[in-house]
Image 1 (spheres, rainbow, N blue to C red):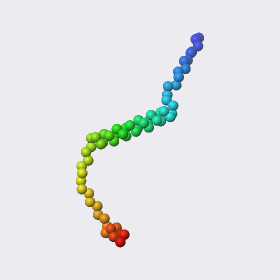
Image 2 (tube, rainbow, N blue to C red):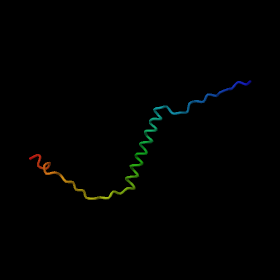
Image 3 (cartoon, rainbow, N blue to C red):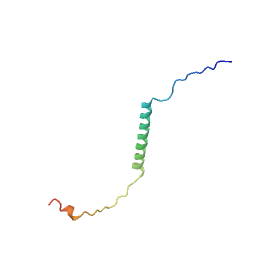
Length: 62
């Protein structure tokens, strides 16, 4: 019978620090891209806002 010869391949996976930095950078790029898209494509509609303040809070420092 012939002997089975196995060729050992060098490990091609990234070390954990590089993998972590790549994932964090990729997620940061996604967030940045989403914010850029919102700023570019969404136009806010201005509107008036009123809020009632109780009189007790207005006269508190007198």
